Image (cartoon, rainbow, N blue to C red; front, side, top):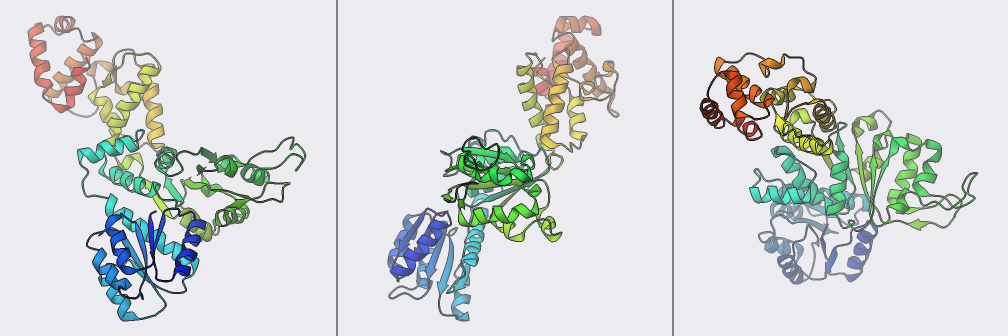
Length: 456
């Protein structure tokens, strides 16, 4: 998050900058006069401007009025010691995000900053449509995320913006939706990219070993501690600590975890000397933390610390356009892995995939495709390879179809069984090679058959 602090009192500027730095916000500029602030805002793309209202010569409202047209997406937060409703109304009308009365509690200030930054991200990074250039840029930023779904494209725009901040990010979604892939992408796009990415499955850490695993221990701290051990926080120093299944963290351990996030220090077992840690926290869960909080299973204050930004990954069944795209991607990988010449799915196989609910989401699809590749004995995947019962000679047989579609399916089935040999196909069908070629040329104009014919 790139922030500009504007106040005519130097003590207030340095004090606030120190506070934000302690919170992990590194890109903070300061300015002690209104005219200088206007120039700085015009020349720099700040995410948030914290602006004092009462300043000599050019006050905060004048700065806001002069700067907002140049930086419509920058969020302005006005700070003042004077509780004046008319000033607050005017500030909001001029485009300010919020109006805070001094002295402001630190927690409230941080919360308003986070929300302002989140709105900035939403306004700048969620376009109604995505151009080809934007899609290419997203592909480079998220090389392992494959999608044509507009909803996913918007989500990736938002993720890219939030990744560049220091804020903790919570990723939610059903099992198998790709939460760790998103976490890895956030790490690569962040200021912590040069540091390590340390993934930890919270479920795998025994409660009795929690402090030792997360905070570390020194030799002799307990029976079996034969050497010094840096915990997960130290291992992730200068990088990203990814906490998978954070919703499973036992309630009695949440207070200890919260203290580290607040103080940014840890203490190894057996060593009284605290260690300061600079770590980006990214968490993931497939449970509803808000509901868990209402049920008394998760601390509300810990949710605030983990959820400065929230990314929800929709299940695969809600992005049907991606099923065939992902299936072909996994087919290519599995075919290369198992050294098999399999090029595509039959139309009925794609229909079969599109009708599945995939409770295991993308992970389930990948496993299903790999199993199909192992079972296939020719260059196409058919429904029976996907666990569907059908007679092979019908080349599908899923649902009713016209005689024209039936003839097309039969031709393609025979062609696939003859490994693409047009002469052998013609002999089996009792027609000439020229008739086969003509029929294929006609079918190739239909998008349902185009890619399939190219691979035969």
